[in-house]
Length: 116
Image 1 (cartoon, one colour):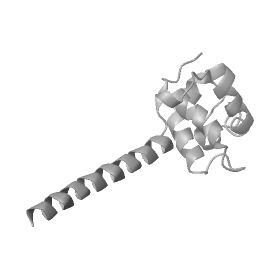
Image 2 (image 1 turned 180 degrees about the horizontal axis):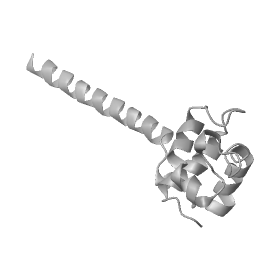
Image 3 (image 1 turned 180 degrees about the vertical axis):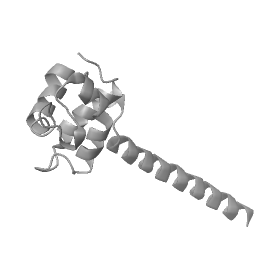
């Protein structure tokens, strides 16, 4: 009886360890960390994304929703809310952006929204 109890305990611990390892792996691959990011440049990477997808409606002449995304300062100010809108597909109105494009904005934010 005592040996059976030890075997069940070992099996239980092994099962928990395996399920934790599997869950951790899944979480790591689906979450962006700064280790997953290359250095993102505002001028080279972020500004073109904004120009192609945002500034036709969010500019100094027509700031839809009161949001102007035509300058570094404003893009930096609205970066997190813009990322949320891109992630949930509500912006741009033409359709959800490619995950790689959204990833660039996410990396830029995690790197401190540098004006580089």
